[in-house]
Image (cartoon, rainbow, N blue to C red; front, side):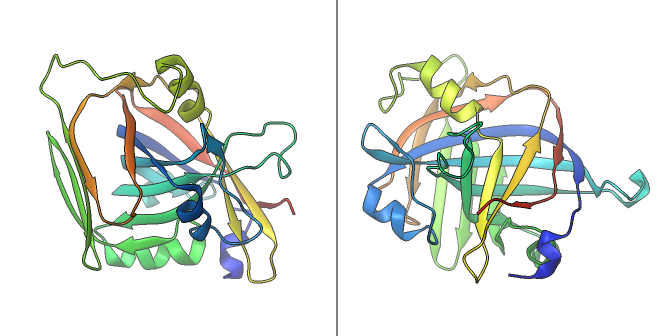
Length: 233
C-alpha cells in the first residue's frame, strides 16, 4: 500500500446529486471481495453493497486554499463489513470500497496514490433517468421510475425506517495494507436526509448473485470532510 495513502491529510468537499442504490449478495461471493481480516456484515443472511453515485465538488486537501479545488463524478461499490471488532464505539457503520469509478483517468491515478478509493477509469453514461457504468467488459445500470411512482418496500429490511438507518449510518471505510494492517477513514457530514428513490430497472454483471433491495436520493447539497486514515488493527 502506498505510504501516500496514509498521510494525515483531511479533504474537504461537497456532495451533489447523491443517489444510493443497494443490492444484496450471497455471503460467499461477498467474502471473496474482501481482503483478510475483513468479513461481510450480514443482514437477514445476505451481504449488502451500497452504490454511491455523486458529483463531488470543490474537493481539496484541507491545507490548500479553495483555488486548488477540483470536481468530478464518482461512482463506488461499497460493501458493508462487520466492524464490531474494529470499532467498538460505533460498529455497523463501516464499508470496504470494492470498486470506485470515474471518467477522468488522470484523477483515478492520483486518487489511487493518495486515497483508498480504489479508483478505476470507466465509461459513465448519466442522464436524468439513470446511470450506466461500463468497465473491462462489465456493466451496471439502473433506471429511475417515472415521477410519482412509489418505491416498493425494501425486502431485505423490515421497512424503510430500518433501511434508512442502515444506509444512513455509513460514515467510515476500511482498507488493508500488505502487512495485514487495517486502516479506518471516517467521513464527517452534518446531515444525510435520505429519500426513497423508486427504480424501474437494475442490472449488473459485476456480481453473480446481486439482488436489488432499495435506493435512496439526497436532494440537499452536503458539505463533508474525508478525514485522515487511522490504523485500527
